[in-house]
Image (tube, each protein chain N blue to C red):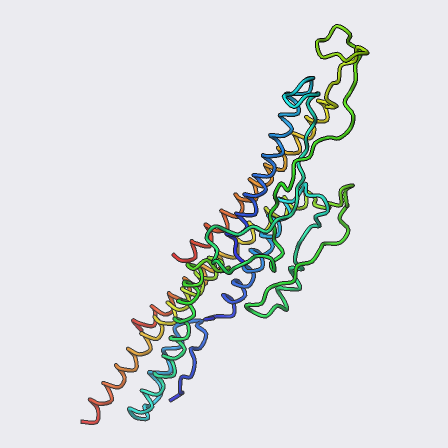
Length: 112
Length: 145
Length: 99
């Protein structure tokens, strides 16, 4: 990677994409008997995950289990859906700004 | 692994909830049907959902998503209600039996409506998921500019 | 002359500065320094190409990963071009001086 910052932003977006996939899976299975909510421990994975490795899928604790064994909460998943998308948006904008800055620095060097 | 894959997952959710809604609507339409071509009153039907791994149409042939955790949903079966029908005393009815009882489907329209709202809510949730993912994909493409 | 083994992180136009300040050690130093930098650029290019190929063949690669890999390869190549041009410029100046 050219800078540690773009590397971090890339990893952040990787994890957000992974998390959003699991949210989509949870919402598809919101009425599936026996299905348990899937998620990743975002903070932990961001700090410790090796680049290129896949985060561990875990079941969030303290979710209410309905009679049919399903514990997906529409409120929780909807909230995560929005939050992941917004954070991804922010990270991609920051990455673009960083790349622009690098490009400008290189082009500046040309005329110096 | 890939955000595109989650579109397949959400699409499977849409299909499953729609199938569920169709079954419910049929229950509602036939809540008073006392005779079917198979004989006997209409029997209430229900869908059974099961998690089902989805292969994206663009995925490499050897690629499976089983290890990734994200899974879609499919209707594994449509089951019939096996409870005995609702017998009502109507001696003049053409379908009445020897004792004057007519067998009606055991369908409660209020329950079916609540179930239908659940299917609509589930459908809407999958639409929201697809929209959010499409937005993230669009932002990703912006990174190329 | 500080040998360039890998592309340093960019903060300002700084990376171009050392070229103007340091004295050259000869043609050999130029070409080996360039060769080292070129390896780094090549690695990033190959990485970007492989990400694109993986994406096209349907593997589980996210678009943002392809985009970032592409941008990095692009930027490192642009930087390499600028550095090489400065090298060539400096080299030509020195050759003129010795005559």
